[in-house]
Amino acid sequence: MRFNNDRLSHWFAGVLIGWAIWSLLLFIPVFHHWLGFPIAKIAAFAGAGCAVQLAVTPWLFSARRTDENPDGRIGRRSAALAIWFALWTELLLLYFLSAETSRSARSFILCCMAAAPFLWVLIHILAYKTLTWRKKIY
Image (cartoon, rainbow, N blue to C red):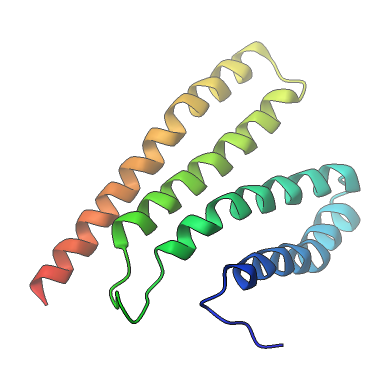
């Protein structure tokens, strides 16, 4: 079966296949067999990453390059990536927050959780400005 860039269902299938391959070829051999993490934690990690990517995929799909819009929608794509990375960072920090940690570690994690979305949005705003500035030159 060939994947078609114009079908959202193929984008979803790509996400699921990609996370399954990463889980089987990297996460389980490295994190379970080599480092000794339980399979349940690896599955939770992969499931959270897959869920966040599936949630953002329709937004990325709508920002792709098409015949009607050959440049794509850089602003929409940049915003989708900022939200994707912010959600993923927040999920990872929540995961670490749920573990047994000291009071100072919890304070640090909460500060990171507050700052991470703003940092990702700032990075992507700067990237968007850079991309649109370069586009005007050419």
